[in-house]
Length: 256
Ligand code: 13P
Image (cartoon, rainbow, N blue to C red; front, side, top):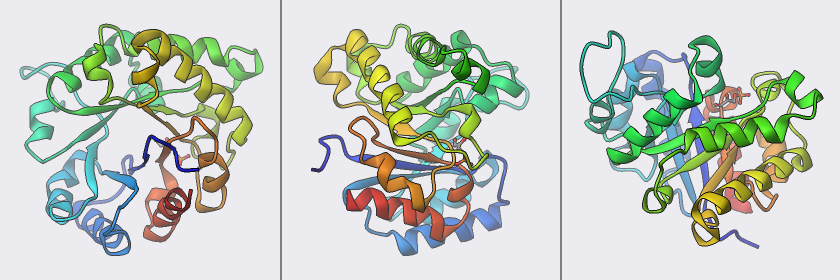
């Protein structure tokens, strides 16, 4: 049975691809996946390739996302990029609170919340990332950690804005490790995130918000994850860097 919420599959290219390489990859995705019927596809290249990739995606249904953003409108924030700068490149989505930013750049839930509010206020759709470390999972803290991240990241978000949210559950121990959460483990966390969204926004809205899974998703394991009732797509790292593996995951979503 098709889900009422359409699937959303996004490629997080992280700090990979020069502008020229990014163009080649984006062209390949558009060539193989020019018709995104039934699946929303988003490419998130590094900032330096946004403009070049925007030109490739212009006449295709494939959407453009960024990997980060500063909450301020403008000013003395050396090295940072604002929501309006992203908007000027036709960026529709922005990944916020990725575990790599939480870990290496000490981003807190409060700071991520500021970014979420700025993104929504500027017409960008945040992909809010949450997920636990292995020690947290082993101690049975997964649901508590994720609860705090979701509630912390979504403070003051209104019901009207909530429809534009995407949440990505990415267990940190599964990122880039080849270890994937089993469909059951992932579904348990996704269902609990759905419960938090019901609590925050009511069930009609919560039912519309897509929750992606991320962490070593590949063409070979995508189908069984996407079959879970609360898994509405994927946020793909490594497998998004090659046309074949990325489009293989999109195909798996399309077939659901
Ligand atoms: P991998 O798909 O490489 O595990 O990365 C997942 C991720 O962090 C996407 O944001």
